[in-house]
Amino acid sequence: MKKVVFLFVFLCFFAFAEVKFDYGFDLRLREEYLGNIFEPLGKEDDNYFRIKASLWGKWNLNQNNTIFVKFSGEPRFYLETDGFLAKNRYRSDDEFIFENLYFEFNKIGGSNFDLKIGRQDFLFQYGEGFVILEGTPGDGSRTFYFDALKATYHFDDKNLVDFIFIYNPKEDYMPIINNNHKSLRNSDERAVILYGKLNPLKNLSLEPYYIYKHQEEYKPNPITTIPELDFNTIGIRKVYNFDPWKLRGEIAYQWGEYETGEDKRAWAGYGFITRSFKNAKFSPSIDFGYIYLSGDKSSTTTKDEGWDPVYARWPWISELLLYYYFYDGEIAKFTNYNAWRTCLNLLPSKNTTLSISYNYLRANEPSATGKERGHLPTLILRHRFTQNISSHFWFEYFVPGNYYSSTDRKNCTFVRWEISMRF
Image 1 (cartoon, one colour):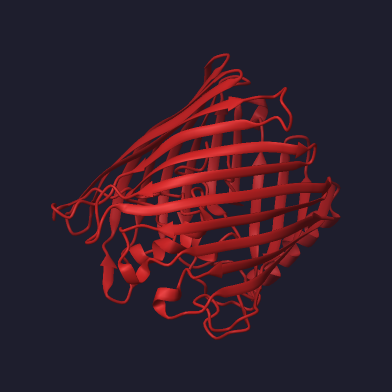
Image 2 (cartoon, rainbow, N blue to C red):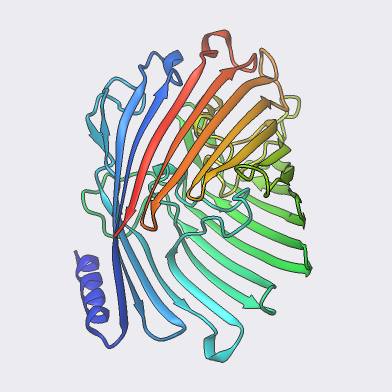
């Protein structure tokens, strides 16, 4: 209760102080359908609405210093109650939380240093989200925040380095309305990140990084215990533009040790080439590339070679596969994976985009039945009606391969439509 009173007084003070104040309300409506994904467990299809509402306020104390607060909730309403996610409920996740609460100080004392402290998002601030994007994988896409301190030093307008300290507890510690005691992560986590954004040449960008992460012991299921782990990740992302072509890629290596003494050694990477046809009808572009995430070898008992996604447990590969990883032990923990991927992107109109992709998926380390994970075609249609109203339609269809047992090989479907509004 004291925390609630403190925050109320704090917000009121700044609301009436002599500062520039802005505010708004966001509303996002989604319906999601998951067909056959959990049928091997004896569960029916999931079909539900997700309604996210957010109220935010921003105080500009002066040109360089701001305070931002965002309060959000996203209850789910199930059309069928016997699905795996529904769990015989008509409603879930009906709590309201502080999604953001941070202080931002730019050009401190006229220097090249910026500082951002508090609950903040890193959405697509670091490459394509290969290692850093999602801080709260336990609540799906309701939130993405990190409780963090981020200090930035600007060498010049095009080159900078970020230093980030993260402390993410398993459950939210801030005031919550209708607290569901939701596990946002597997365990309490701490991390230190150094991330550079450099442009040594006009058409070349480099993003070298180092991440140290500590996670406590946790149980992904009743019979499995993952020991306490300290590990490091070092990597680099490169993007080279030579219009109409574009090359992008990333490679990273991990090393560390579990509390039990088991070593961790893993690596991952991807590479893509894009060809754009800006003057053709619908301005098409074509992506083609390869993704590799190392897997844990069954032949070694004192070493874990499985790639850890660090802070990338989000659907960067696929919405549907995020759930299908449940059969590997943990939802959205992408590991032991390689894929050939091709994607066609179109602009049917000024405010409309269409992306159609095909993914051929394999495992690096086989299961008892094989290495082929399967085939995944996807379609994503986006349209912006106005500056403040946008929408999308998302479709994925997965044909599992022999990596999964014969009883788990059910063709699966993911469908979602969304309308987002900002007031």
